[in-house]
Length: 310
Image 1 (cartoon, rainbow, N blue to C red):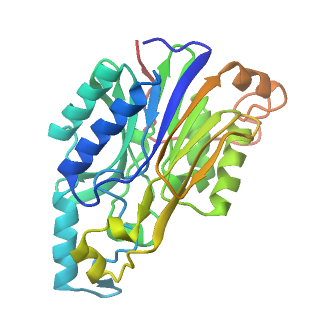
Image 2 (image 1 turned 90 degrees about the horizontal axis):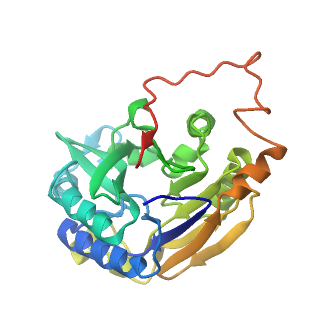
């Protein structure tokens, strides 16, 4: 595969089989196969699609104590998370090879006895090429996920396309964004669990700040999608929409190329013209002519090299 000036992308706004690793992997394969019919170069899944973002769950925690029932729920979530590399990553890598697409998949990763919110990258050669662990889980997410570090702030160069990602509220961290800008990212992935209007102000700003395309991808989940025993324990109403989606694609000028999709599952397609990232840099380049290294210094600990996909 060789990206040039035009890159075809597909965002997967869908519902996992919540808290069931095997069935959600099967769902991933169905969705990759469906998206592949349009011939995308890049397929993007939401944050923690496997085995699901644990929205509305507190795992029996309060400050100073944890319940035994909460510990059992934690074990269930832990056992349905995936190891990297492992059986599941091999399955998705093979799907990437068959589709001929670069795939970014959000998972909850199991490492030793801790969990991480991670975005995995699979090359069309059928290889797990990189992993990004969320460097700062937000609020009660810290009960579930540990912190990643600078060594997973990966970018991928395919021809003149540079792909990078930050997960959900990492995108509110100015220096994390600057880390991606410093590596020349022009296709910026923002998998998320945020479906608020204010999130869209953020991703539009990032597109303009980074002079890059922003691909924001979220799940669609209702209360009825939760397993019955979890819904009952966490008082989740089956009629509630817990994640309305809002996946969209934004141009380097901060305009929607694909408007947000709400309240349903959908695969969102677009063709990105990378020449726009160059044209939009005439008046702003955050790491070039609009940077002032004589005033500001910027150092990133353990920043990895860009992975060159050939």
